[in-house]
Every structure is written in C-alpha cells, then in structure tokens.
Image 1 (cartoon, rainbow, N blue to C red):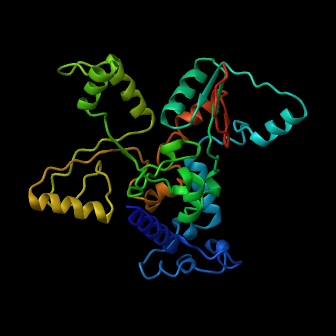
Image 2: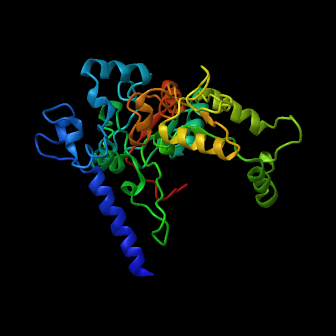
Image 3: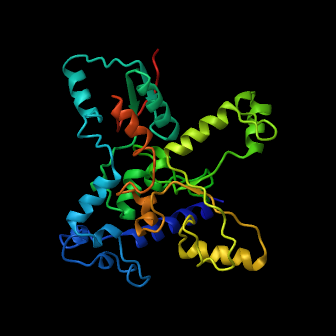
Length: 322
C-alpha cells in the first residue's frame, strides 16, 4: 500500500544519507587530501572499519601516475568532448548545424561498440550522452558524489511499487562505467526466445560447437574488453588459488566455502579487470579512477575517440526530426 511504499522510500533514503554523508566544511569535503583522516569524514565509517576511498591513501604523484597508466586516451586533451553550453550559446546568436554521417544516442555498451566500429570504418560519428563526462581525476569514489554524478536519477530510481532499486549508469560509458566486472555469455535459452518469440533469427544458437556470426562478434568484444575466464577453483579452501585464478573478496570467499561445504556447484565468471587483487577493484561502482576495469570508456569509446568520433555529454535527445 501507499504507506509501505512511503516507509520503504524513507528508510532507503535515510540509510543512504547516513552511510554516505561526508562533512562539507573546509576540513571535510577536502579531507581526503586535507586535515581530516578519510574515515573521519563520516561518523559511521570508523565503526565499520571503512577507511574511505582508496586513493585518499595514495600520494598525489603516484595517484597521477596510476591514472595515466590506466587511462590510455584523454578525451579532453584530444578535443573529443564537445561542450553543450558552447553549442547552445552559438545557436542563440546564430544557427549552427553540426553534420555527421552517424549520430549515436547513448554511450553505453552498444553505443560504444557502434561508435568505434563506424569511426574506424571512416564515418564521422557523434555520440550523444544525456549524462556527464567525469574525468578520471574527478572521480572521488565518495558514494554521495558518485551516486549523483554517475547514476540514473542519482541512484534513486526504483520499480513502480518502490520496493526494488534500479542502479543504472547515466554518464559517459553508461552501465559499463559503474557495473561490476562479471562478464556472462547470453544464456542460450534467452537467445532462443529472441529468435522464436521476436523473430530475431540472428541470435539463434547452432547445435554442437558451430559458431554463429553473433558468437564471433561476442568473442571479439570479449577480447577487446579483456575478459579473462579462469577455471573454477577445485580446491576445498578458497584461500588456495592458482596464478590464473580470480582474487576474490571476503564475501565471495565465504560464498565459495559455503557452496563447497554444501556440495553445491559453483563457477567463476569471466572478469574484465586488469588487476583483481588491487583494492581499487572494490570501488568500480563509484567510479573507476584508475581504469582498472576495461569499461567502454577505456576501450571502445577510447577507440572511437582515436578514430575521430566526437562525444556530446549532458545532452538529452527527446525527438528525432528526420
């Protein structure tokens, strides 16, 4: 009922504010590099042994080096980012028409792959993104700031009844900029449904080991974004890992131990992190400051930018005239 919806919404809001709030006084907001220790930015953090954003412990020089190592293409340096305010100012004083062979609406996974493919084929490409472009050094990894800058409706989007939160990316890179690094193949039953129910025969899987064009395309995408598919651990102890294994966090290790203890089958998914052992891997959902995850920003959108594509962030498309 309405009362329950209101209660769920208020509870979610209060818990989120309490756990993500940071002091915005002179000593607070700049406390990551200032007077306060990172865990002093929020009264709950020290109690739960949360030390704050990982880069707050990194010396500024090393921080800059890590950004440069992970972010191989600087969109701003190469003039790949267009300023919507400049365009609006121009059109106010006199009509300005931007002409491109292809205009792609949305810079998420599909938009990025399309932009790179078309730009490298010689087409002039414009990618329009309703969310902002947040430069790597501006990714604070603070929950309150990143929810506001990187997520649809500042992470407050829910289902119609308000019971389930929908955490969707709304910035350059779309969902690839904030989603975790698990890379799963499209289930065969889903592909069959697309073919049988919706008439999309292109996705229909073939029997045996025969590959379709869709399979080949997915293989190329997985290769470009650096998907590693290590074998599942056969050890009874999740602490024992081979060199090719994914380094799991404590939560996953407990889950694996529980599955093995109960005799349940488990499998390690493909991952597209450059380094799974680094603590920075845990901050992916709050901005990948060091480009550790091979998201669209550091792969296909970067490829598109290198091929001459332009990106227009902070621009919402409401209607296509022709």
